[in-house]
Length: 113
Image 1 (cartoon, rainbow, N blue to C red):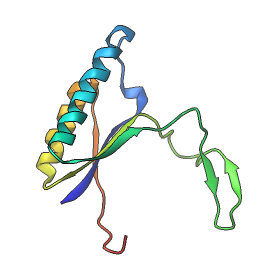
Image 2 (image 1 turned 135 degrees about the horizontal axis):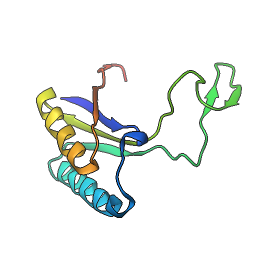
Image 3 (image 1 turned 45 degrees about the horizontal axis):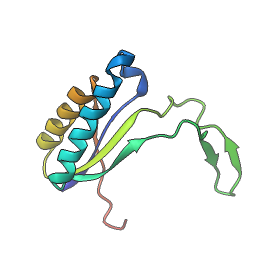
Image 4 (image 1 turned 180 degrees about the vertical axis):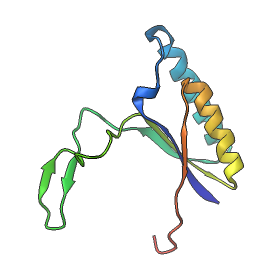
């Protein structure tokens, strides 16, 4: 089975403030379904209150992420599933709950990890 990342950047979630409670409930309901199905690995979002740092090979720490890269924010869910078709189905459920498109990626398997 492969692990799939289902995610969205914060800017894609254009939901009126009065609907955010329903979005949270709906998204958490999908997560609970994934847990009950035994496919949930982990999920959450980047804590934007803590700035990223770059750590070099010599241990030097520089505040900020890669200056050329887009901001990493939004929501993330990792599920372990037997097929891409099932991953697409779960991503569609998340898209419906979150009211925004979801990006789907598969993690490459590294047998030494």
